[in-house]
Amino acid sequence: MKRTTFLVAAALVCVFAVAGQAQLLKRTTTKTDSIPFGAGSTLSIAGAPLGSVKVSSTSRDTVEITATIEVQAANEADLAGAAVLTGFVTDESLGRVSIVSVGADTRRKMTSAEKKLVKNLKGMPYRIDYVIGVPKYCNIEIDAGQGEMEISGAQGNHRLNAIDANATVSLSGGNFTSVIAKGKLDITIPSSGWRGVGIDAQVATGDISITLPAKLSADIDAAILRTGEIANTFATLKPRDRKVPFTDKLIRAKAGAGGISIKLSVGDGSLYLQPLVE
Image (tube, rainbow, N blue to C red):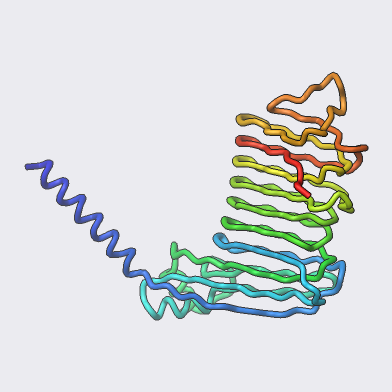
């Protein structure tokens, strides 16, 4: 009897929990902006806790921003308030544009009514997905939470940091650094004529894959710090030091004549070195 009562109570709890979740309302809006942006300038993006950031080059001398914003709340009044509080703000200065995501959890000066609204929205998820166009020659800095990340086409000094991300980066020139706590990072150098300074990428838990042109000249250091292994299908790589042979945990290699520094490390996971099919 006691077991039956317990099961019935547990079932009722599940039903009420599902019903509570079903009552949450969602609203999706789109916000756009266009900002003058000269070649060689820096674009800084502070992403939302949840959401994607995709940056690609265009022929324009502006930053073109499209943000898809999704908010949730328990009722229409709170939903309308959440939509007002959530989005992005920009800061423009000489040679630099910053895009900063804001939501109900962002610290700011608030009226008493806004404080009450923020209390009602506590724990309510929101997401912002960015699609951003930039001039070909510029620097990109991304600090993100969880989501899909992409940088393509732009030549400059790029930095990508994220908590939990699946990131895809195509580098045609410049420098790239990245730290990802969890996720996957896929790097492609599409041409042996890459005019780069170097790459320094780290993933704590997850995978890194890098695709390199067959004729690239670079010094490559790849390491698995704890668990996992390196899968190397780039047949022309040679040890920089004949006394330090390749292992499934460490590769110190020279591609071509050497030169450009490429440093890759994974804490727990896999690291893939592969040739570009041209």
